[in-house]
Image 1 (cartoon, rainbow, N blue to C red):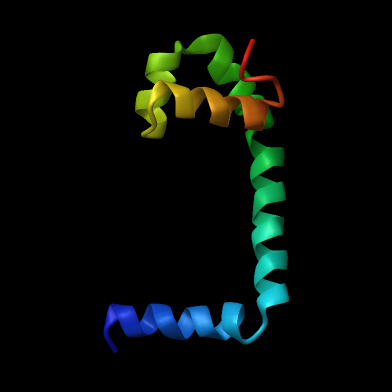
Image 2 (cartoon, rainbow, N blue to C red):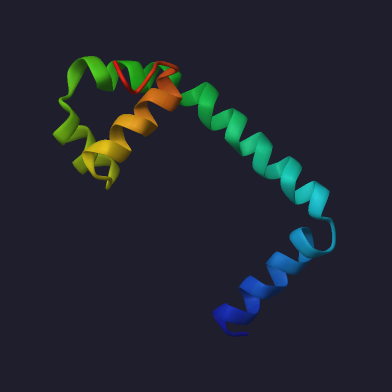
Length: 78
């Protein structure tokens, strides 16, 4: 089975057959990410400059600031 077909089958198994279950799973991942990234985001803000954080995250500085702010629960404008 080729990769495109395997992805389609996996997508159909949850998203197409049970869209609410897919949304519930995505929400659970979102909550887990927020819970586990809180302290690391705050430590990164304290220990690394924005350029280092952006490079480590594969983002530009604006994207890194927004991601760290979201996970660290602070305003990106401060």
